[in-house]
Image (tube, rainbow, N blue to C red; front, side, top):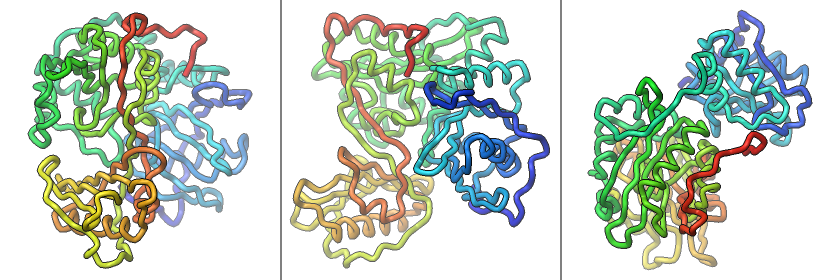
Length: 440
C-alpha cells in the first residue's frame, strides 16, 4: 500500500456519518460508530477527524484495520495539523482515534455498502451506553435481524466444497504480515499434516475438522481438533468464527464434546495452527475470553513483530555468531559461538518474499546487546540473500523482548498465547452462555 500523502488532502464529498456514545465515559466495548461513504481513506478520514475534534479535542493519530481500506498513508494533513495513521494493531471493523498520552476512543466502522436500516441499527447499538458487543457481533446481529432474526445453526463435518468459505474465515483473522492461507495449506491442515514442519503433527490421531452452518448450509465458523498418540491429551488446532461470540462459543463447545472430557486439552499450540505460533489475543479478544471462561489458562507466550523496510545495523563483525542449518523449520539456527545461554535466533527460509525469525532471549545475566545486534544482522543478511523483502519475528516469553528487535526497526503487532485446560468435573460442562449484563 502507498506510504505517502498528496500535497493537498482531498475533501470528503459528503459529511461524515458518526454516532458517539453520549456520556463518553468509555464504559462499553465501543465509543461510537462511523459509516464512511467509500473505502478511500484519504477522502473519508478528514471529515471524521473534524467532527471528532469538535467533541474530543485534537486527534494526534489513528489506528485502523488495513484490510478495510484501499490505501493507508503514513499521515494526513488535516486543517494544518499532521495526523499519524497506523494499521497496527487494529481490531477488524474498527478505528481507534487517539488524543494525547495514548488516550484512545474505539469506533465501529460500518462497511460503506451496508444498507441504511442495518447501518443505522449498528450505529445506535455501538453508541449505546454500556454496550458489551464487539464490532463483529454488532454487524452480525444487525444483518441477521434485518433478514428475519438470528439464524439457527448446526455443526457438520467439513466438505471439500466448504474450502472457499473456510479460507475466508481464516483470512478475516489474519494479522498484518501473515501469509494468506492457500487451498493447499488448508487441505494439509484438514488432513492433519504439514509438509513444511511435519514433526509436531506426527503425534496426532483422530484429527477432524467441522464447520458451523446456518439454516441455508452456509459456513459461519470452523474448528479442527485432534488427540495426541502418546498421552491422549486433546488438541484444539485452530478455530475461526469472525470473532462473533455465539459462533465462537458454539465452536469451542463442539470441540470440547468431540474431545470427550479429556484430562488435558491444549489449544493454539505453536506449530499446530495455520501459520501462527499461537492465538493473537489482541486481534481475537472474543476467542480469548471464551477460552478463559471455559477454564483454559495461558501456557506459552510470544510477541509477534513485523518489519517491512530493510534496515542496516551497526553491529560488531559476525564472527561472534555461529550459523547451523535447521531442518524443522527449514532455515538456519544462529547463536553465540561457544555459548548456549545467550540469545538465539532461528531464521526460517523465506517463502514468497516473507522471512520469519524466531527470537529466544538470553538467560538472566547473559544479555549482551552487541551479540543481539550481531545475531539480527546475520539473520537479516541470510533472509535478504534468499529473497526476503519483509520479515516477521516471533519473540518468545515474558517479560518484553529485548530492545534489539525494536532498534532494528521491528514493530510489535500482537501478543500470541497458547492455552491448556486441565479438566475438573465442573470444567467438563459446555461453555456457559453469557448473560445480558455480562460483558468483556
